[in-house]
Image 1 (cartoon, helix red, strand yellow):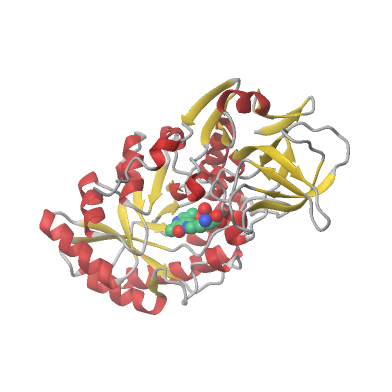
Image 2 (cartoon, rainbow, N blue to C red):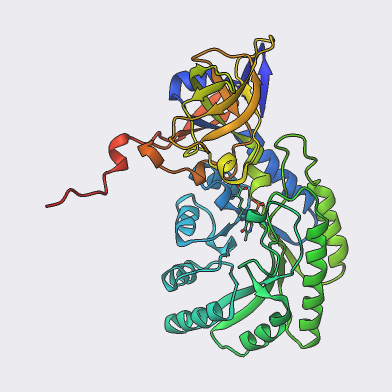
Length: 412
Ligand code: LLP
């Protein structure tokens, strides 16, 4: 929860100025209460139904966040062996892990089988063949759900749209029945579910319900052949408010889902990422220089595209606010970082009343922010801090410059 108190932006009860003094900038700051509230909202919307919320941890995989969610009973949607290792390191239950992704390696399959995950979301016939071989070698049966591509337009940014037939994701809708039949004949495979994920940052949930209808058609067709599924997984995708969007209401969406599922005996799984963490975090940065110009004014800050790539990659809009609200009107700035690229901007044409040395907060930076950061320009990754009431926890140390090249070797 982020709000102004006495003209100064706070994370819960802690002024961001104090966070910057103690931990430096750039720094990601999360609110524990906001994280917990977002998960609780999803879970309570599912209350009374057989359902499991599996946090899509690619959105933010810091161990402290996984720990918080695991304690509240969440499962996890993973896309790599690395993410599974994080779940286990954070004390999460592998029995609540689902493994998505188009390119799982044999080593990742082995690790996931050994760990006893809930299921593999299989995305192709070739992946099924490989999984059966790996499970066979290990003398195990692999629990499988097919990720079906419903060919539904999620009406979101093309880079984060996944449910159209031209996207690389999922098995073709028309090929799904045959694949299920083949899988039920494989002794190393246990068919347990069906899933889809049509895209991210959806600002309406109608496309999700459209996809659900298509999935239910398949569930019924399979049941008619005696193939009974235990669960249906609708993926993630609910958007959040970055600017003035009206994001889908979680409770209304979940009600819509259960109304359509009706009396079918299916457990429902969800894979929300952004909607659980996006607005629970911000990126705190300090203005190094103000650089007025004839065409543009620039506020050069100490965070850059390596810390938050969304504006450069998707032209994503994040609100940027001065941490100390002077109440006076300011000038219009492009907020840019020190990286040597013209795409290195965090926001364009923002009205800010600021001076050199002031702090800015780039809002809605809990999702797909720190986890997409890089060391471009040999910049150490930012620190991450979680605020809990009046307490602050350093949940990731700022990287040290030496660690950037610790794995490199000079020529002999
Ligand atoms: N499940 C699967 C299989 C996914 O691929 C994703 C996201 C999710 C769940 C979670 O979706 P969410 O609830 O967060 O919308 N980097 C982009 C977003 C990429 C999303 C990738 N997949 C961004 O910064 O907007």
